[in-house]
Image (cartoon, rainbow, N blue to C red; front, side, top):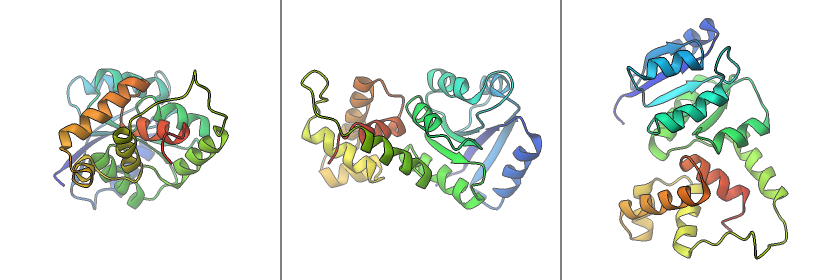
Length: 215
């Protein structure tokens, strides 16, 4: 994979520098700027836009939640990896459905951060064990009796695309397995995201599992 540009927003300078230093051995990842909070980050994005932003949640001024929504609206091509100390399921659900592509805790080691960056670039999302536990809990809670008024209807082709996305296949890999074009896969993804009001592939995967759209 070609060089991946990254920006980091965190109000603790020592932590920012530590993350940057810890990822220095991975020569295909380069940090192009640091930001102290959401306002600072959004200002920097006016000039230079990285492939991925590592974003803290609790910051003075515009926090990570507000910033995630703003980036997904104004800079939809930028991927967002939350990097936070908050091990709270409510944050995971809200952020993954509103533009975040992954959710990491600050105790993650450099190898996991690197893996998350690579997977977000390749697949559009990263689901670690913590996020998967949240998904399983959400799915279990939603085992309700179907209603004709609330049932979500999707075609078999749409269901298969979602199933393969949840198994972490890329669009090109899904196209090959289903014997359709990659453009058709992307079109199906875009149509589903628009229908359910979602921001990205991560949100679609999260929504699908939470609402039991696949077997």
